[in-house]
Each structure stands twice: as C-alpha cells, then as structure tokens.
Image (cartoon, rainbow, N blue to C red):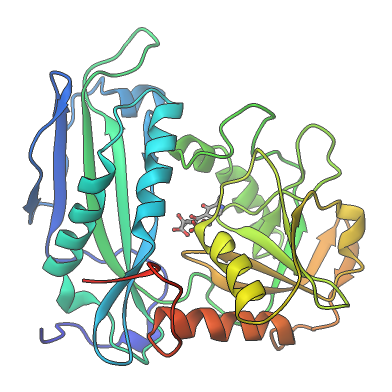
Length: 340
Ligand code: PLP
Ligand code: COI
C-alpha cells in the first residue's frame, strides 16, 4: 500500500490519528462482534466505571516494516494473555485471546499506510485497551465493557533517541506489595504521573522506583523494566511481584542466552549493587532498549562506565540483535514474528 505520510524520520512518541480503529462491546454477559470504524471519539455515560473508578487496562505493541517490506508484529499472544490477566485483576470481562490477535491484525491491516517504512527507525504503535462503560456509582465493577484498538505512527520514546538517559531514584512509590503493579492498569500510570513530572522538572529523563516495602530493591520505571550488565558480562534483570512482566524483557533474556551466549539472571536486585554494574538499560515496547548513563540518588551519582554518549557494548549487541529480529535481518525464534 502506498504510504500516506512523510517525515517518518523525525517523529517523536505522540498521537497521530490514523484511518481505522477496532471496537467491540461486552453486553448481557457476552462480547459482541467487533467492527473497524473511522470515528476516533467515544461517547460514554457520565457515570461510566472507567470515568468514576478508573476501571481500565491496556496493552502496547508495535508493527514494523521489515527489510523485505513485510509488516510484522511481535509475540501478540503474550499481549493477549497479559490483557486477560490485567482485566481479571480489576474485575473486567477479558477480551477473548484468539479474537485479540485477530483484531490487532485487522487494525494494523486497515492502517498499513501508516506503518513507517524500513530504515526510518519508526513503527506503528498499537494500543489495545478495555474499560467499563455502564454507570457505576456505588463502588463495584462495571458490567458492560468496551474493547478498542487504535494505532499511531511513532518514533523513539525518548527524544534523544539511543543516547544514554539520566534517571533519579524516586521518593514516590509506584506499586504496593500485593497491589496492582504487575498488571497493566491505567490507575498505575495515573498514580505515577506526579513522580514523572517531578523527575522531569528536576532535569531527569525517568524515575527508578525502588520496592515500596523496604526501599532497597530495584523495581522499574514509569514505562519500562530494567536490564543490567555486570562487569563480567552477565545480564541481570530484577524479579519482583510488583513490576509489569515485560514482554521485551522476557524476549531479551532469550536473546542474551541463545544468540549472545550470555549468562542471564532474573533475580532480586538490590540498589546497593547497582553502582557495581557495567551497563544499565530500560526495556519495553515503547522504550525498545534505551541505555541509562547515570542514576542520581538524592545527589549521589552512579555513573556507568559506558558513559553518556554511547550505549554500552553488551547493550548495543542486545539492541542490534533484537532490532534485527524485529526488522527481519536476523532469524527470529519460532513463533515470535507474525506477518500481517
Ligand atoms: N513496565 C511498565 C510500567 C510498562 O508500562 C511497560 C510497557 O509496556 C513495560 C514495563 C515494558 O513491557 P513490554 O516489554 O511488554 O512492553
Ligand atoms: C509500552 O511500552 O507499550 C507502554 O505501554 C509504555 C508506555 C509508557 C508508553
């Protein structure tokens, strides 16, 4: 399909309306047939569950144009599963997983002209989401829901692209023990906005959250998980019940082990250990792999040996291998890439 946009190289991470979006409603105990529509607006009852008690969850995915000009998406079944887990955590009717993948494919196909071309560095961000629509005034779950998917072409999540970021250790908590930190719920993002704005006002790119029970262990940022590389080239990533189980992180652990022959550890990471690591990065669908150069802990700086201009060498290898898989330059593990 002919591309109907230009300027693919200079896009940031912001919303641009595309052609079609997918909508399906849950009513009388069942999901109705979904449709593609051109209307980007939503009309809701003023008392809808999503508006009053934040009953909403979402996913984030990307479609890429490969070297051979195919449009592909990455491990959509894992997003389908995570959306189901998120929905159940806040008593919403999950959208059926097989229909999820089909709906994503339909939506990307309908917006194929907005998938940035190979080599542009851009992608089509895909945002599936689910929310309570019927009026709820006493605190209780909604009984009617809407599932939607929109797409928007995006560039890098952080404006300086692959340049190393500066983080600060947050004074705020992102997730409580036994709370909702491991589900992708709108409420987690609402409650972290103040911390994010505060970090940015103080000149930092992102927050490093520590576990709220002991404030000794590394959790994640507002929108990505952490990876670390030790001085002897081991990949370490924090294990916690209160962080989002990142699909990118799970994939990078496989790539590190099977493609790069690295030792990989998913374990609790104490903040105290961080100063001894050689490299640090953020990983996620939006962040892909974004290197971290510096972490400020209330005036004390941890400066990674990889510095503030380049990605560290192992992070770079992971980044190149992962991008190679997404863009069809490297062979992907079985089932990771779905051609649209
Ligand atoms: N952590 C948070 C809080 C996120 O919002 C995201 C983004 O989805 C991630 C981690 C990374 O998850 P994934 O790699 O599945 O996109
Ligand atoms: C994603 O990576 O898809 C997310 O949902 C994170 C968000 C901060 C954009």
